[in-house]
Image 1 (cartoon, rainbow, N blue to C red):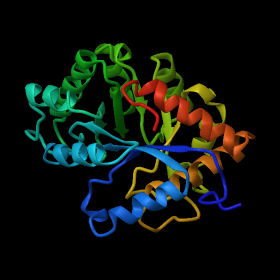
Image 2: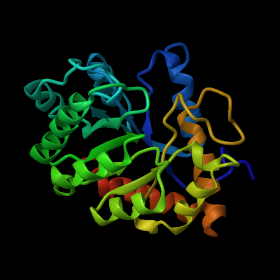
Image 3: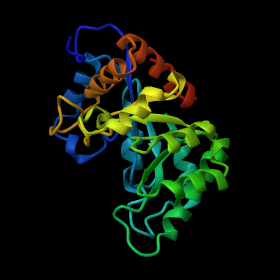
Length: 266
């Protein structure tokens, strides 16, 4: 059966970037395709401060669409966010999370202490507002875990989004109360180690996402990703874990609401 059609269960895309210009020409159609594929809710995560008003407006204008505000670690030093502006943005209607934030050393060279300072500011904002973190980590696993521990990020909770780390990282994140979200990467043929993590993960800590427009899952790989394609990720995980697709959809939707406490199911 095609995961994009012919089922009655609801899915949630827990992380996408519908504010990006990639979607300006057909955003209405993309939202319609998501609904047709059973994607009842989606969370748009900002990566730059300039887009905070855009993600807020998209969330405010659509039922079942939520927003997160933050500044991505790959944005250069000095790109914010300033503390008071971050708190004001987090207080906006339908903003339910802090991020995406984290550490990414893959594209950074030299002193990256500014990334750690930015990450600490986001963690502090999450604790101050009671809204969970959306954590990005790439080529920075040890420092990411160290900062989550040292800054007491467990007090806010959150999710390691677009998870690509190993079992030890997953266990450490779970021990701090974090959720793990899988993107289309888990469907790739060479993602054997990642699939092993996905198979062992407790059901009540599992989330699915697209990270659209990036990382389209099989069999859509190579195309621009979109929220409807989260159905492929969920179907793959169901087969991998030996569970019914409806069970994975129901569980990941419940997990989404448990983590993002300020959401209300449509």
